[in-house]
Image 1 (cartoon, rainbow, N blue to C red):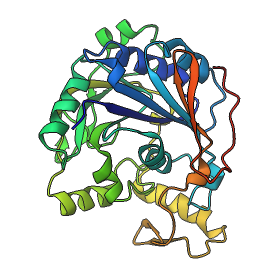
Image 2 (spheres, one colour; image 1 turned 90 degrees about the vertical axis):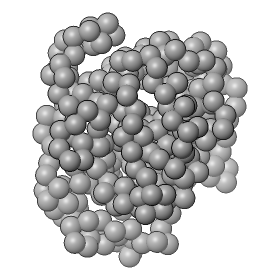
Image 3 (cartoon, helix red, strand yellow; image 1 turned 120 degrees about the horizontal axis):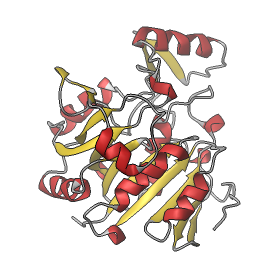
Length: 302
């Protein structure tokens, strides 16, 4: 398998955190010409493109906008699962994928090398990184501050508190195997769809493996959405109230406390995507349309 890696991130108004993510990736002990950073923007109103411009002499970016009104869900959702699926299917060029949230800062410089080696060794497994929350967002002033002074609050892993996260904040996997399972569902179990038990069970049933073996440490920068996590029951109840007000057209039903999608419904609607722009050295070098010529164009500052 090639050493090329597609790094996938979905975001909205996270540029102030994403800049530390990119700084950490720029310091990886890896040939950065072999990676691309795939960004789906859910409608940011901040300085995202200024941050991207600052790093476009280091990375090749593939950028698209996602219109959340065109999701397969008949509601406006802040859940990034559909965008993650879209990025893996339509934007990522490479077989090896590292899905990483914009507020994740990788502490150890061997992450990409480790991801490359793990997927070469066995691409039937999905690998999650060690992941720790920080205390608060008020003290972020530099990459060095984050790396040197973060407080270790471990994410929960299967079986209780452990060193590696059970959430998809920093995960590596094979693109083809991920797509065989149709990607992750938007279950709203934690308000953001990260703890997708159905996907884990499907992965284990199909391939017999689901592992947490990345030893590189990831620091999860605390931000506002982490202050109040709804319970599964509350989140599903909230979604159910919204769904009752919609004309579902047999798209979704709520069964046993979980959202269930009609198999005839596209799991990731390409109509959500704008044209996909590849940015390198400050210039647009390629434009791709995955919606039969109907994708909107972006006015990018490149």
